[in-house]
Each structure stands twice: as structure tokens, then as C-alpha cells.
Length: 127
Image (cartoon, rainbow, N blue to C red):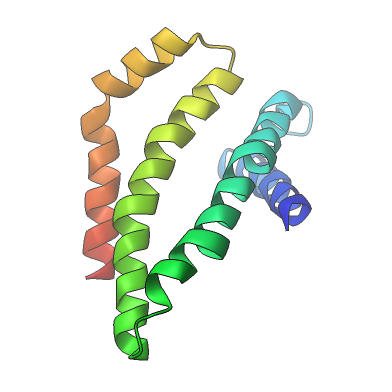
């Protein structure tokens, strides 16, 4: 699954650069694609595996009614997991871009409103 996640991130970034940003092959950033892949392989895939494969099932398994179990999963995913991934994921991604830890933390704190807006949209989308 981790390898598949890396492949999907490469394909996604190439599609983004080619179709959305309309870059030619010469202008496309291999370094950016490699960075996206490394974040997926080293961060997103392991975190997703732990949350969806280990933690979340233990929390929702005791809930007997399927609709309540699904709703609980969605709420927990969009509150606990999403906020954790946004906070730590942005920090990890900035570190991969060769920034210093202190600069990354300061940038995240300065732009906290931007990240909370993402969570607001996520909750509104599911409600």
C-alpha cells in the first residue's frame, strides 16, 4: 500500500503540472514530484495506515449500529485525524522543502486561520 501511495502521488503531481499548470516536460519540476512522493511514502502512508488500520477500528468497532459507526468514523476522521494531518503534514512538507524547524513552526502559526478554514470546509462538506 505504501508503494501504491507513492505511485499515486507521482501520477497526481505529473497530472497537476501537465494539465492544470500547463507546464511542458522541460518546465516540469522533477524535484517537486520527488518531494511529493517522499512526503507520501514517508509520512502520509504510514500515518494513514496507523489511523485507518489500527486506531480508528478500535474506537468504532464496539459500536453495534452501522449508521452510528459510520457517522462516528466520519466525525473522528474529520476532527482528530484531519487536524493532526494538516498541522503535522504541513510542517513535514516544509521541512522537506529545506526550511528550518523554527521557520516552519512560525509560518504555520502565522497562517493558522488558513488551515482552520480547511477544517471548517471539511466539516461543512460532511454535514
